Length: 207
Image (cartoon, rainbow, N blue to C red; front, top):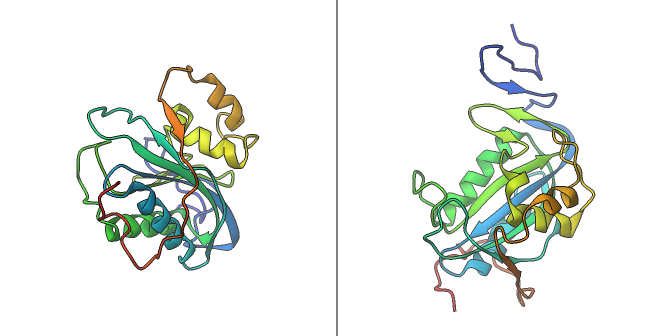
């Protein structure tokens, strides 16, 4: 019988580290990535942040700048708007992931679309304290974050000295390792208004 807090399989099954209760005893910090390349991309990101702020036991404590970023892995699509937020939450990784999927669905994302293709909203858990989780549902740290300029640059806006719990390198160092010509991005001006979390934020065409 597996102990609470650890789920491991020597034959390649689920592996989970120390925190596995549905709701954390105390708030934990986490970094989330947000991206959109459909509709009014900036408004979509703003609305998603407002919805994150409304999650039970969760607050947004820091926000990175907004960036327009070149798509990766599937290049035949519009550029994205990306950012990263730091939250404090009492939700477990599983419950947090479920909440993010609900926000994506509420804002028009259709499941089983083109992998890495166009989407009104993409929400990912990047880091959660020093937790390492690998299950069929969730992987933390995000397995590709160290290769993504659109993730690393916004994290460095918040905390460039934050260390990856498995690679043991700072976000600044991981960003510096990327080739300067890879994954172009440009900083966007700060949006003038906040979004209403009750609206979908993605339906209007981008100007």
